[in-house]
Image (tube, rainbow, N blue to C red; front, side):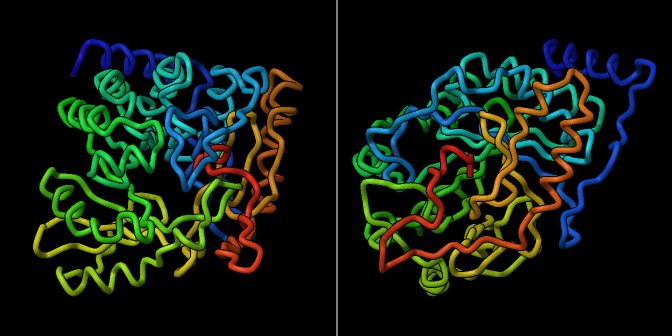
Length: 357
């Protein structure tokens, strides 16, 4: 254990041993359909250093920085959810690692790992800043990271991300692995772009000790392209892969919506996230918090709750806790994603970078 990590754990133990401190949740969040909410995804920024064509318009208008919650406010909100039974925190964006002083927040949140109140603290990243932060993330107790990577072709990578550098992402992945962090790759399956490359990506990922998860493109936010041209159903992808590989369904779960198979020929795991062809909502245990303090109870619905107002209205968390409870009481049964071939409009107006996936 590094001296820095040991220092973090000592601080966490000190907090836990103070009079009145407790690691037990003050209440458990149960939605109207009996699902326990134990997973919070926090978008710490809507900004990103890429402009992936299925996610953003190239000329994006981002939130004024004055509208964002401070890192201390994000910490307080996250802690309120941990106190109410959240066991897994995932920081997302935009690109979370471009948020100024983001490691201050991650270091602070890591205290919940030390007390045992939190089981996992992790991030989803495009990998561009990973080489810089990998060692420090590991010191903070981050054991697993999702890296978004849609192609292994340098030219195609530049085209899909507009601004990205594949070599930089690869260096980040290697740095994270060297630091002892487990990597899972997320690839959005796009018709006519990377559909023919998926077998190669699968072999490469598994050969490097990484799981691979394929994701259907989601109709979130206006983009420059046409999602009806991009959409590739994963049912068709799986059928094609089954002609080359032996795929066996397994019960493995990471807390998210992916359904996994084991690939006999590689010995690795392949996940499928299918918001359109196979709705995964029946077991949803997640809510999503934006960098402005808006809580979305469902990725695919517009209904949301303002947590910034109660957060700032009082130094105690009573108003905030009540607002969270009210929001969880409105969590819907599921989303209504559809690729609309008539109007070609997104199912939800906000971009993925706002909600954080």
